[in-house]
Image (cartoon, rainbow, N blue to C red):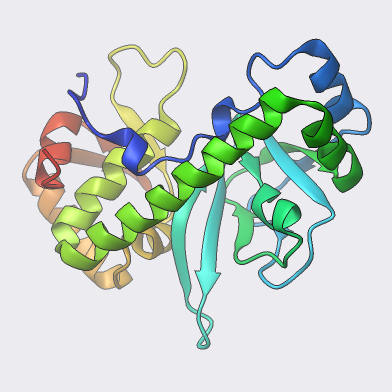
Length: 234
């Protein structure tokens, strides 16, 4: 079942298209000293408060981006998938990371050194223009997310979160098969912005309503269109 006219752009970054279709000479600059590494689930790419030494490009897997409060509680504000860039904001602004990035499943991630990335930006007007547009768009994404999550109920926030995560977990050969979200209840609760116990209760309601089924920790989205309507964004 297809989602109709859902405003994904309001809640999704666009860094997955930054490197697509770049001229070969621009890609050569980025690939010159690129190093790929396989990360286990739960490994940290970078930590809030540290200085960047390069950027990360996801070739396989998923990464959560989150902030931590004074009590050590996480608030996940974004999940990155294959093709997305991480860490370039801090690098360009010459500031410390404002968040932490951690893998949520086994992932293959490429690291592009700082000097190579900055050189590519200086030489490639296409890359620099794309990054500028992405940074501007991502500011809007964060503003929209803050507004929605401040004004919506837990039920509506969960529906929105499941809808957004559906796009992250949808496979290239998905076809009409229901999308399965393989995410821990703790991480999902941190993404929704609620207590784990509350999340489990609302998930149970969704299951009783026939919107989802579960298989262990996997959540199978049976009726994505109805779930997106609960998010109250139409």
